[in-house]
Amino acid sequence: MTPEQLVAREAIAHTQSVYNTDGDRGRLDGLLTAFTDDGVLELDRGSYAGHDAIRAALSPAVHAKRAEATGEDRPRVFLRHNLTTRRIEFDGTDVANAWTYFMVLTPVGLDHSGVYIDRFVRRGDRWLIAHRRVKIDWQAENSAILGRS
Image 1 (cartoon, one colour):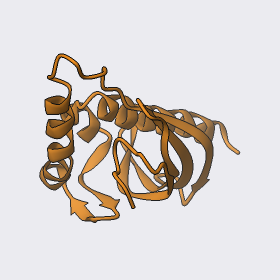
Image 2 (cartoon, one colour):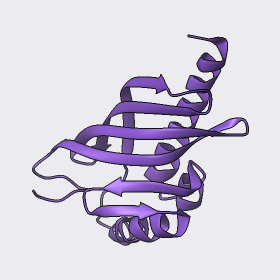
Image 3 (cartoon, helix red, strand yellow):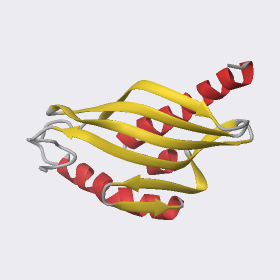
Image 4 (spheres, helix red, strand yellow):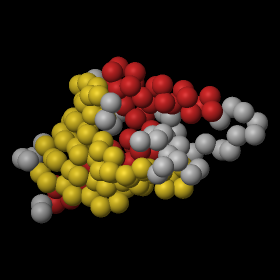
C-alpha cells in the first residue's frame, strides 16, 4: 500500500461519512455532495443517475419521516447508519472499488443491515461516489424504514 492510497482511503471514508450523516438527518444537499455529478445510486427499487434523480428518489422518504415526527405523541425519529467492515481495492490512481458493511439503528433498534458496493473516483483532492449499490441483507420484521418484506 502506498502513502497516496492511505490518504485516498481516508478521503473515501470521509465521503462515506458525509453520505451517511447527511442522509440520516435528511439533508439531501449534503448527501449529494458525496456523488459525482453523474453518479448513480442503485437501490432495490431502481437505479438513479445524477443529482436530480437521486434527490427525487430519496425525497419522498425524507418528507414522510419528517411528517411522521410532527405529532405530539410521536417518539423522536432518528436514523443512524453505522459502517463496519470496509474493503477498498484500487484500480489505478483515480478509481477505487469498495465494499462496506452497514447496520442501521432506528427507534425499533437494529432496523436493517447490508453492504454498500461502491465505485469511487478521484475529483481533485476528493474521492466521490461514481456508483453505489445498496444491498440489503437483512431487515427487522418491524423495520421503521423498509417496512415488512
